[in-house]
Length: 508
Image 1 (cartoon, rainbow, N blue to C red):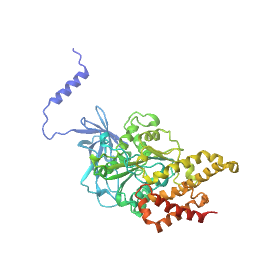
Image 2 (tube, rainbow, N blue to C red):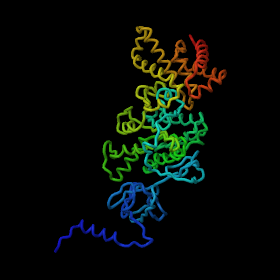
Image 3 (tube, one colour):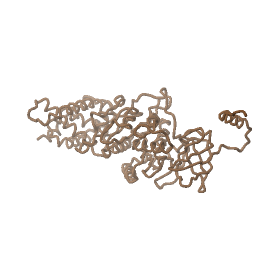
Image 4 (cartoon, one colour):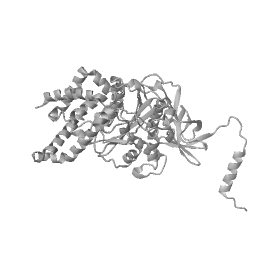
């Protein structure tokens, strides 16, 4: 009796099946062999593609899933809600399309889930277009270097670590240090300065009470009509948390591709990585460092690379990203923080110690950096930003000597005093972003030495007085400064005169 090799037999069977003439009406169908924890294992769909939408027939109607694990004999599909209705033996069909979400102007002012379904109690959203959740990033030749400023309205950021349109600037720090506050202030500033930038805020596994407070605040500030909020809560399935940033990016890309400008805020990518880890472990992928799968870097790199400043040929639109990462005990060398730091164009590091000292925003001048924003900085703020950075770094070096007080020479004392005033100046209340002229005037007043005789505790008061006087008496100067150009000698003389007069009133 001849021995038949199993592999040969399988090959012959496959060849015979492939040679059969297919009749109309036949479709690629599969069957659920097991299901659990939001994952359905499907046998029979050999032609399914990555991220393709699958329809599972249940007694309660069709349940959607998308293919994530593609193996030779079975597919691991992640269920998008309605898992409790899916049972082993259920029929599965391919829809023949990759996962997409509704995009367009109709989304503005709405709170939606990652599939574009409304969560704000409003009517169903009907859009003319849909955008792919997964999409390749724009190539090298389709991009332009970052050259337009994206003002946050936060003096410490705009002066020292500026952000340009198309940049990816990471906001990183421990929990409850003001990361989301920076993102919200940036969104408010876009509305106040009438920049026309569309905000897309992606809440990944955030408490619903926090999202509700945020939406109320955005409505109060008049920002909501140019904002899309993509919301997921901790109780949502891991699949929705995983999809949220990609779906939000697809909504932002719509405006970028039409020649507009959009700002993406991912709050936060730490929870996103945890959701992906959960899904990967359920799909039986081998775990790596900290139990994350091997492709966790690719998870965020393919997301953040979609943010770009487009070339003039493609419409010169931009997508700017402000991803947020939460650290544990300020450890920025952990796995996910180092991954995202290496993908982004700089980071704004928030220190817990500074926060509790009352320095808010608690931005670390030493560990924060912007790798491209300087090219996009307004000339007005740039002209004073250098001396601000220098003054703060000198103060940091000398701060340890400050305790000796009287033993210091006059020059060192002067540097420490200047540093204390700069630190006081950079304190900024939440929801009060500053325009270009306010930032320039404030920094110039301290770095030029006009406030040297003003007591440190009265620095903010003196700053407010200068801004109020200029607003009341010199609107023409304000208008010119707000264009962002370097101020003329005449403008500087006006500012210096007013600053000197007000400083005199605050001297002890």
